[in-house]
Amino acid sequence: MPEIPYSPQTPSSAPAQTKNPSPALAQTPPPLRKPEWLKVSVRSGGELSTVQSVLNRYALHTVCKEANCPNRMECYSRKTATFLILGPICTRNCTFCNVTPGKPAPSDPEEPERVLAACQELGLRYVVITSVTRDDLPDGGASHFARTIRLLKDKVPQVQVEVLIPDFRGDPEALWTVLEAGPDVLNHNVETVPRLYPEVRPQAVYVRSLELLRRAKEYPSRIRHPSTDDSPASQPAGSAGWAFHEKATASQASEVPFRTKSGIMVGLGETEAEVVSVLKDLREVDCDYLTIGQYLAPSRNHHPVVEYVTPKQFARYRDIALELGFSAVASGPFVRSSYHAAEMAGDTE
Figure 1 (cartoon, helix red, strand yellow):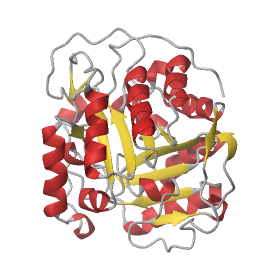
Figure 2 (cartoon, one colour):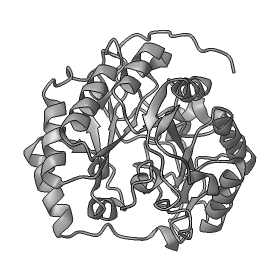
Figure 3 (tube, helix red, strand yellow):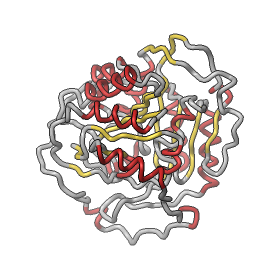
């Protein structure tokens, strides 16, 4: 795979704004009607209100709330949450994403301590840290990620930390900064098939994302993989499309490459052959874990939903991915990047 040189981009100087769709998006036909398998309501309850109260008190954002994720009650009950750091304004303008593009505020140096306090108060066992893309920062926000990881690892030793990172404009030093902090899983989503990048991720580069995942494998780390006894390999896939491959039952703590993870949305207009090609590309860079979920357009100003992929097709993608050698796969209409993240990482107690 060719090396992708680090090429800093000009920071965004535009104020925060709503999505500015291309003429092609503006001329899209009326949205498709949702099929029955997607018509579910987000449950509410005591767990949800408790978590939200703590997040509000510490002025923290979560992807769970921002995206109105249908899985958040399940995740909260499993003591898992996904924190969105580095502010709510993104320097890029992907047409699938509901995050506001524009010029972000400076990063908040006290935010890592607030994430720590919330995790301690909520008794979280597994924490996912993600962010908007911050091309305005010299290191893309890598040092902010690293500080958050270190605080959690130092103060809450039992917690596992997964990071879902942007591409840092291909800067390997930014990637090393994050990896040196010791996350348990390094996640970076390729999001869609290469053909759709100009429409869906115009400021991203498909090969650059693959290169990030490849580089992460070159950085060794002491990782405790699940043992044969505590792996959920025997669990059935179920309606959520969850499955483990036999090779996920692995070894004692040892010097091993970082566990890496990626995800892709379907329903944007891709073909099955293109999806399978992406899965093969991810295995070529030794990606361990995979999520596949249905794309749902946040508004008519975003990229339209071209297809509602059937549960049967999600099951087919899951089976293909496992055949290709992924250690664990979550594939289904409601699957998101952090879905069953703890189970993928082997924390199933």
